[in-house]
Image (spheres, rainbow, N blue to C red):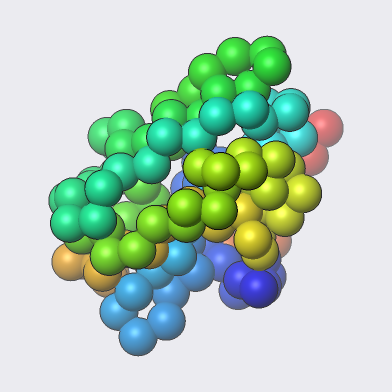
Length: 126
């Protein structure tokens, strides 16, 4: 759904796929594997303002709980209720059905500060 090769990635493993001023966001395939079996996701409400570096969602797995940080600033315009009902979608399809929410970007230039897929892959190589 959201071609990871066209996504931009934060060091904290969130991705953004931008189209027409709106960015879909989620966690990377690497992150979902590290977190393990996701059992609960709490998303922000539509209309909430988000910004990088501030937690705006929560992910819980059988291992631990983790905060989700928006990779870009803006207003939440849509949330993926499917992952609230079925959190396993994040593990099954982190760049597809497991997306978290969409942001109307207030600072699209922030995308330039994120890594492309090739650079992100280098940071996760073991």
